[in-house]
Image (cartoon, rainbow, N blue to C red; front, side, top):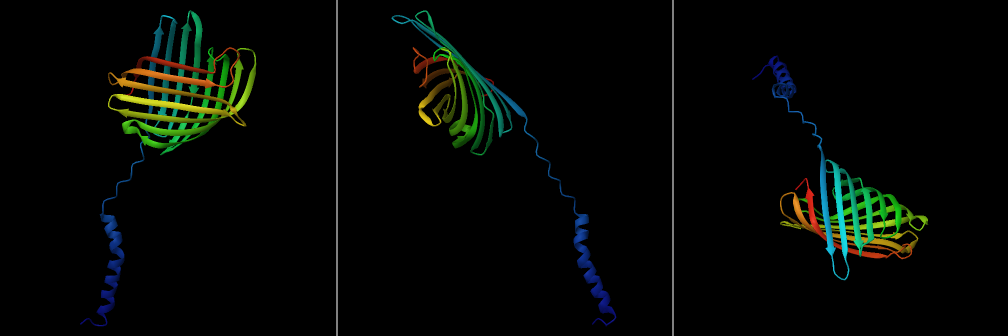
Length: 260
């Protein structure tokens, strides 16, 4: 049995040991590895080029040549700046019919299924009598289906646009439009299908509408080269005299992409 002289010393040693043991263990344990800061993802560039056309002869002789180019700069998975351009040139019965130019800059931000877009376009059209047209705007979007690994997507977006047009007959106007776009993409094996449809009624004047659909089928020949067929329909309520409101083109050709 401990005497009354030994008990305080034993108790002191026990309390001191309990108090100092966590500090000693921490001093003896190897320092935990400090979490490395996330490595920023490098910017990437993606380029795609498409060349299509058609030639018919007989009762009606028609030639149509179209080319589309797309260059996209992306920073990681969230931010990107696509720049696209297309040009079409067509003659029918030895007369110029189509000479269409469209350039689009559409920066985006995406987070999971949410999208945010800005948009700027410049357009010229002999077919619709447009000397030049510009559109600027912004708005949100939502990906209802997002399967990048298999190239499948269903995306809906809605932008508010300010549109300024100078027509070939000398008239001009500036309007505001609501632009709803439905984008579909699907891939199975070597076959890829994509479709983009936009519907643009004038705000407060819904009868004044523009809408268009572009549908493309592509069959891969190599990792970067593909055979393509494209269907394009455009409609515009307001056109100058002797110009058609609607137009349909079906073309075939090839496309190249620097990324598989």
